[in-house]
Picture (tube, helix red, strand yellow):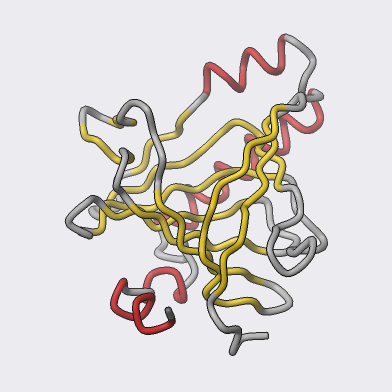
Length: 180
């Protein structure tokens, strides 16, 4: 599957309790354990972290979606294609990556995210949404504990340079353009 011809794909993303959104992308690579998807960022308002815009209309993300991992990773680029950082969603591990040739299986977002700047500064995002979901019982206390543990594990691995995976760190936009 690694030699996949780039093709359109829809990333199917569920936010608990049942909000499902679909994002267009181009499947660049598919292996039994990972998908790489280029996806334009669509936003009505810019997303800022620590006063800096990290996502806006015209920005680009290269998503690394893994089988059986508690996270996915987006490598974010601005309109000029300058690399901004990594956006890591904590997700329920998926057993199967694709639901047909043009759709991912449903990826369930578990609220907490980790933003990592190009300078390796890290910010945990969406804690207020996570706390609200816990109060509304949209996420169990067991799962909430696991989510916290997973985001802390990513932060620790980041500090020892064990995260993100080497393939993510080394991916350059010119490689992506060469795959299209």
